[in-house]
Every structure is written in structure tokens, then in C-alpha cells.
Image 1 (cartoon, helix red, strand yellow):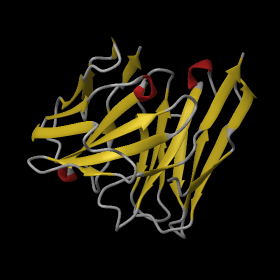
Image 2 (cartoon, chains in turn green, orange):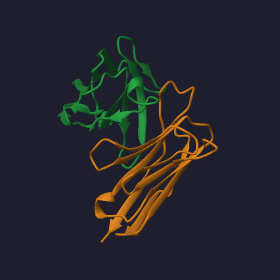
Image 3 (cartoon, chains in turn yellow, blue):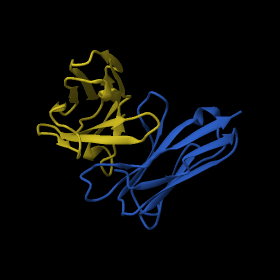
Length: 118
Length: 112
């Protein structure tokens, strides 16, 4: 149980285009989803927290107009990187949690999406 | 930013040896989680700890939630080549609104 998927697994796009990444909880309802960014050989950096049906909460320094997050249902959250530039190239990982799934909000991670902006 | 100290940063061990890594925090946590990440993949949950003093095993892995609630360790016994990867600790405090703080990771390399 507690399976999270991400799509696509890897994407290459031209500078200036927008890219949408989907995160789905496959066998549970995710009350909260989190979006992380990871640079090579570094730990995970939280970008934003999203709760179903409400606006995402962004971490300091993360541009909300650049990284649009939508959490339209209890099983789907999307991250859209708008007007992508080469410096946005990174590994993006989502996680999902549900209070009823574990004693506390244990996060289960997706497999990640490798974004390369040319 | 990270508020967890995870050590060691990397370990090079021979197959069959035991591995030990730990994390310490300046704040009290309600939850300690240990994840393993393979290259190009997302972190996979290994062990979750919810009570101070709790000792939990998952196969050859054992982790403990420190009594002070500010530390945790992970042990891997009799390492095998597939144990290679980066291990992250993560903790959650009462005022974190479900957010996790991550350690910097411990890279484990197992040689035959």
C-alpha cells in the first residue's frame, strides 16, 4: 500500500515553455501532498505543501507564479513549471500523506521527474 | 533549511559488514523516518518511528527513536551489494504542519 506515482518520469523541454508534472496517490487518499526539488548529491528541498481544495503554501524563496501547484482531488496534485529556463532543470519529487494511514503524517514519495530545460 | 545533522556523510564498507548512521536535531521530534534513495528514484520509506525509545526492525534494518526525541539511528546488519544508496533521516515536529526536515544523507557503498 501507499503507492505514489509521478508522470512523466523525465521530460526535456525548450526554454520558455511550460511543463506539467502529475503526482498521484494510487491506493490511498492524500489529504496533503508535498513538492520537493533535489539537486545532484543533495538532500530534498521542500518547495510547497498543498492540501486538497485549497491554495498551496510555498516555502520561502520559491516563486508561486513560477511553480503553479494544483491539488484538485484527494489523489492528484500537479506542479506546473511556467516559462521554464535552464536553471529550473532539476529532479522534482512529490510525496503524499494521509493522517489515517499512519499514526502521524508519514510521507510516501513518488519516483521523481527529471526535468531538463534546453 | 536543514536542521538535522546526519552522519556519516558517506561510508565505504565490505559486503557482510554492519553499517550504522545517525541523526541529531536541535528540536524535539514526534516522528523519525528513515528513507533510502537509489539514483534517479524517489526515496523509499524503510522504517517509521513514532515513540521515544521505540526500536523497530525491518529485515536487516533496525532503527531507534532516541529517548530525548532529538536523535535516531539506523543500523544495517550484514550488508549486501543492493544496500548501496543514499539513506536519509527525516523528522517531524509538532509545529511543522506535517512538513519533514531532512538530513543531508549518508551515501553507502558496499564492495564485494
